[in-house]
Image 1 (tube, rainbow, N blue to C red):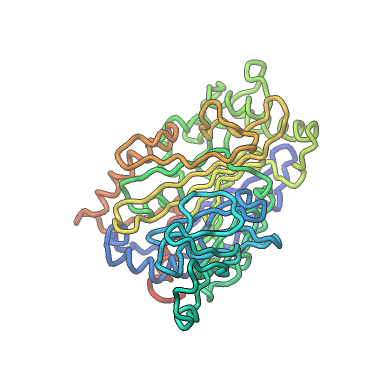
Image 2: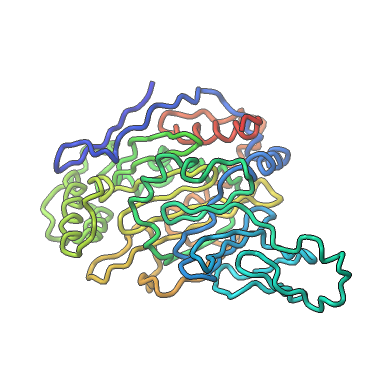
Length: 450
């Protein structure tokens, strides 16, 4: 049995190609061992067999516009530098000096002419070549015959996003992403700038974070305030290599509340985002989604924006992508919301939740990122200044907004339950098909099939 929630463009009644259903992938109905959420041996197997064998999202290319621009990407015990070269290409290196093992870069991002080790001031060109050994005369020539360049890792970019891989065997990035590569490219993420970046520590396994964000089945219970503004039963598409997509229709009530007619405050916020005066709107809650789509197209024509390539659903809804193994991206023509679930290097009962909002600035009144993304008052949305990463340690309120704060409170409870002898593994519905797809792909790596 499968649920076939199809999306149609409301004002035309035509099924847009972007909305096409992916061929069905059957991941079975098995119940996996819950030790994957807390077992130290499983954590180690993940690192050796999965994390080191996939593509990992290091960041957006907007952080790497000019030669010498770099970002540091940390995962588990490893740290990497991704840097724009003088010829415009990208390279990535382990963030470690070959001399004594010191990390080279401590900043999250920046721009340099070369890399200088803080320990003994060895220097390296942007491409990783060693260009200076301090007091080189004091070394035996035979000692310096060893490779003293930075250790490279694979680095490729697609759709405004840059990935690294520790493996030479993983397929090229675009092939690995499959249809998702071109779909993401339609949003012009490379033209967007980071306007908010937060990292918070959560008392749960990183896969618990993936699980929570890969389904909206829990909204009615954990986030009841969302039921007045979004449809929580929607189209899910599964793609090869663990990739997935889900549409979350915004601007209309959940079908759990078919009798809701009035336009509530949440819908008013979304109408306002689209350039509609909510006080002058004469439609019902069921009319608001179509009105948002029409208004955004009209506004795009006035501002000279290329919205013809978007389906109606892309204008009003959140198109959510799961990028295996640890990324979710919520896409809108105006902004994208990137979520990364980063494993703790030692404790499988903890992870870092990394969130990044990117926005394409348009100097026009009323145009901005979706209000539901929860940007702090006074946030600079022009992209002129890249904000620092705000870090919140475990035990402090994450202050991510009502919905995400609710998730941060719930996941430790779920994590504790996953360690109970009474829990025999998850049982997934078709509304949780993205979870089963993700775990089936993870199992392929852990079982040595990849």
